[in-house]
Image 1 (cartoon, one colour):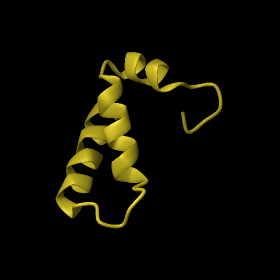
Image 2: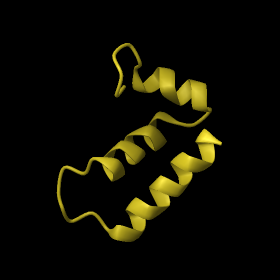
Image 3: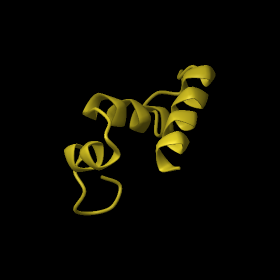
Length: 53
């Protein structure tokens, strides 16, 4: 995904989450628009950190 050779489906499978979650996290971390709700960004970051633990 962010590194060559990793697809969204690969990362989702490895983390045990849905592809939808991966896309949601990516959108929160690298929003296309600057109108992303701050709370949504914080929640997505918390969820990512929880899966990394």
